[in-house]
Length: 168
Image 1 (tube, rainbow, N blue to C red):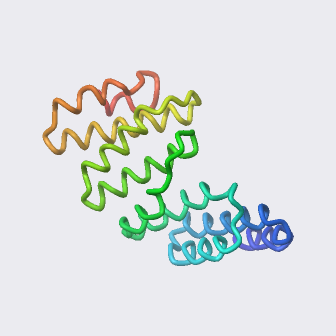
Image 2 (cartoon, rainbow, N blue to C red):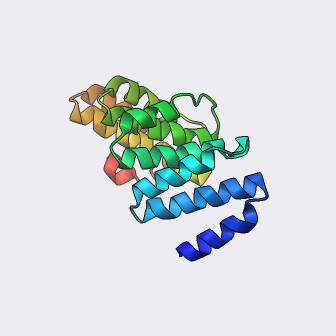
């Protein structure tokens, strides 16, 4: 509940990491309930004193809020500078691909999704994200009548995940 989230912010305010996490949690609470303006405002307030170790988490949520508001170009601006090739960054690159596609920049979006679809992370969460990226990219190719490009992408979807039926 909101009262619980706010209660967590007060003691965490003395610790920059705890305060940043609490601000992000409060924004996530608003985002999940569809209060996008409140979520965005909370994230902008949290950004002022955000420790570096929370940067990726902040960018992830802020970009999702912007995309939910249809502000794809702004979301792209938040996500474009992510160049690391680690598991956390893979989620940001997926969001970047979706934002680019929704902004009408299909070729760039396809490239971003393809990079996520080839990510080598081994965790179940990353394998699922990889399958989601490949399924999204495959369907995008099919919608744009690029059948030859769709098949190799859809073949990359693992058969024991949650996306194989869509890929087939």
